[in-house]
Amino acid sequence: SAGAFTPQCRISPSSPTFQSSFRKKRHATKIQAFDKLKELAEETQSIIKETNSSLTPTDYIEQEQDTSSIREWLRESIFLGIDPTPDIVAIATIYFVEGALGLARLAQTFLLKDELHLGPAELSALTGLFTLPWTIKPLYGFLSDGIPLFGYRRRSYLIAAGVTGFL
Image (cartoon, rainbow, N blue to C red):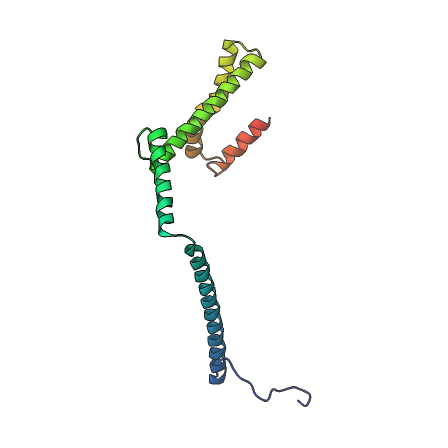
């Protein structure tokens, strides 16, 4: 056809010329990336040298002694001679939280007794009502695991509980 454009030279991706130029470009890109990484590494090393040059070996020893003295104080005064390993600290944290919850319960008791003027029987009944959901929680777990509703083990029970609470 007279008006159709036909390229004079066509290079396919599989031709050796294309492959060679592609490799050269890829190699140049890798070199640029490597140079940039090298530059960043040198910058980082200079920052580290500047930071560490202000510290002397005695500073490191003093920091270590400060840490060990704090650890020693914790062991002797807080943990009653027990070495504060991560397991011991976790257990102590759990007991601390339980104690804090006990303080909250104490405030709740005073609110119900002093502000709302409830008697001992009414206070006991309300406390039992407050703990009822935690009491039936294991039963609810067995029920939802053993008897799925609408093909779901937990989702349907959560929706049912939400609807019940809404009503």
